[in-house]
Image 1 (tube, one colour):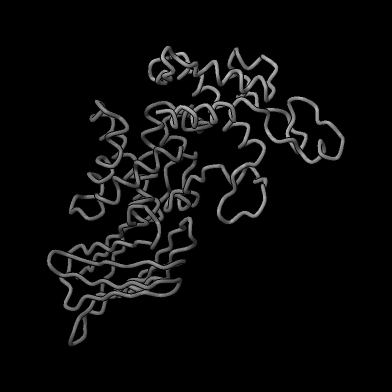
Image 2: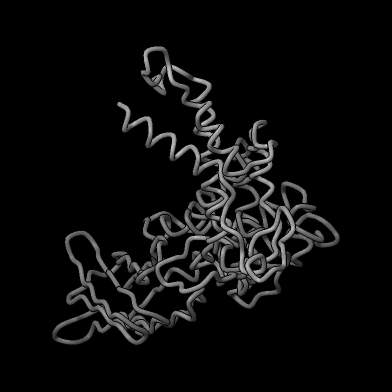
Length: 350
């Protein structure tokens, strides 16, 4: 017990003594109070934790005196236990915390790779938010008024599911945007019909209806937010129609090859689908040039073909004896990208 008390008294005296002087003090240039060896100010956090007793002038003699007061001899020559004096215990922890802070300030700890204290620029500490992988393609959408990216992201998620379904084009468009306009099915169906007729006129090279008339207003809105609900429906339907068209690849004996491009955050994705039907072994082949390492996965029911590569370059998958009017989903994934795959619908026609 006496040995323990003596050790505690020594530790207590060490906590109370002044920290080692710096080089300037050894050279005869006394350092100003409140500065360390480099001339920097004392950490403000230390001042917040200053114990009231620390305001006393400390000296080796005073330190020993405080230590003896912290552990006074009891009657009969027995030392009191530290646990019997809560105030002393609190004082001990306060001094220990102060001394540790002083030692860290005097000689900061280093990382394993450091030989000296280094300053790191703030921008290295900024959290890097990954850019959405598939959204750069939105810049190429043929829209009269830009649609906000959150709306387009929601449309892309819905369209990727819908391109694999057997629904008619009008039903796909309604399903794609209905979550944006809840409780308005009648108006949405009406506007969808207008958009389909306008698109049909465009494809048939007929005299297209004026887009301003399609938007039911003399002038186009200045932005999506400034548009009326009906105009927002038109803009959302046009965006969904463009996205579905980019993700759907119809091939037939009359048009055996189709080409698609999709701009990603990693670079341009090039896709070419080829359908060979008038041969001994009909096949459906898809070739992609990936801007980085990735994989292709084409499937329909139990039929499946996959391929992958670790770096930028070409990949291909093919399925023999494909069934006409069946939709084969093609999932494109990039390695080391925590994103959902981009899904195309490859549709061989008779």
